[in-house]
Amino acid sequence: MATAKNVIVLLKFKSQPEKGDKTVLELTKLIEKVKEEPHFVSIKLHVDTKDPTNVLLYEEWEDASYYNNEHMDTDHIKSFMANSTNFLSGPPDITFWEVQRVFE
Image 1 (cartoon, rainbow, N blue to C red):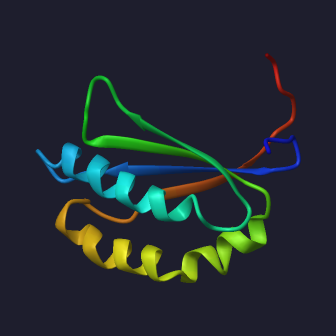
Image 2: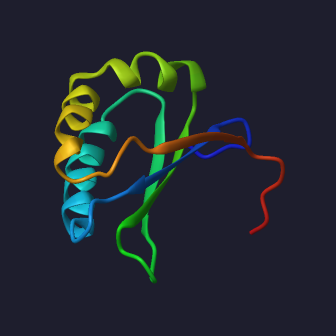
């Protein structure tokens, strides 16, 4: 359930040239596994309309400690990271955010 207390994680990925579609496919497969984890709330996958090699994940989690520890230690995350050298130009830029206000 989305609440103002949840942590927001933004991950900015840069695909290798011509591999934006492969990045989206691999992230989609990964997210299907991540969705089953405890403390998962939601993930939105975005692609830059002007440069499809720029991919952004907007993730919401109930527990930042879980995200930084148990989540990062799952087999599916480790496997994705090992395989990502085939389609990403480097590691993602990851930032953590706190909701101050929600406007709906």
